[in-house]
Image (cartoon, rainbow, N blue to C red; front, side, top):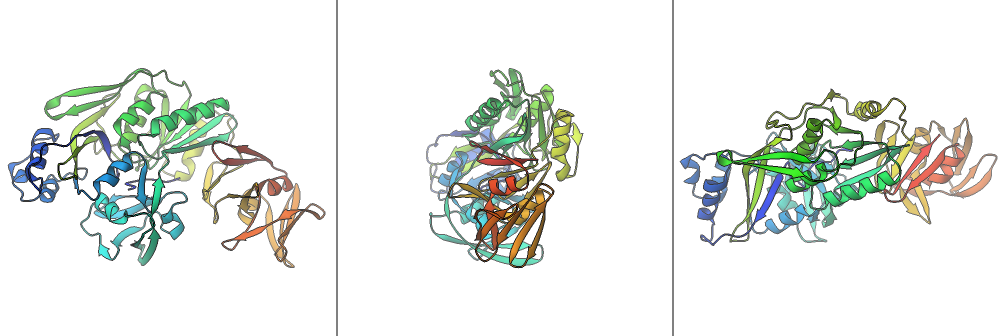
Length: 480
């Protein structure tokens, strides 16, 4: 699953939030100048400090991670650190001077409207995004709950316009599940203030299910709070340094973990979208040699931002330090090099599992309520309709799941006929009645968004599969 962000915090490593300074005037020019002079991690040319506006001064730093946040946007920005905001629910960032959709969130208004990974955002409510940062575009997309926003994108060469209704978005920091007997999987989306507790709860639940190994998926994780990264790292590395923070003038702070690690063999999936706090976590595991990194080279963001609350109610996000990993690697603009390079995303999970043990097997098929993603062995695919519960049954799209189970699907004489070596299932398209085997009636199908949906348990058992349910993960799995 690919999820990246400014969900609108792109590739940010947030160190702290500091209080308001004394007012310097309505435009906060001298206030911002003071912070840049005293806290920016590098010496600044006087020409930068002579700029006539705050925006020009910050822009002249030529630092993609430093930005002025106006008073209207700043409260939402702070809320995003806690994983909540009102908006459309998608991760975006800046690529080659353009703002791009990295992924809509599961079940979000953006996903429902049809926005997709890779869409280039060209306009918001008819106003161009040219020259705007990700945070500025995010601010335009956000608004009052229940109001509508128009997002225009370029998808390849096609211009598409979406009208999306804003809603309160609670951003999950992670999701987790068993992906096979004794092997856990955690996908960490972002390092919010809730992420350390969510990680602890996920590990508790997985270890209660007797996992022996773990795959930690940090692909396309853009980072977040520095303290969250240090806290989470304590689950996977020995007590001691996690990261070294180097401020202006070479002043160095060591951030340590004092936790007892979980002691699980771990494989960490990384790619070019693994950035910032995610690189700190991955780097600490690699440096401590408590796990292996698999995938492609990471993004290479080795600097830290501090949030300053300004007297006009706005904020300044300013780069105030660089960091070194546990092993004192400077990864800025370099990234982490995985222990095992695997450029093919479809092969990365398989390679990770095989590195954890020769005899480890995955569930044949695995689905999660509300998610279009389906695991089929080592691969993931998108379902046309996400699984959901109806009258106590988990409903799944018939054709897709049947085919993932190795069955053939035919339409004949007004029926859908599903056949496998171990069983047979038919759905009468007119009555929606489901029959199995020699014709025993077992239930009814429904049609959703044009797709025939059937109870997962009924389909699995008809095809000779055992079905299991993970309550906490809201996930089902099928085993042949």
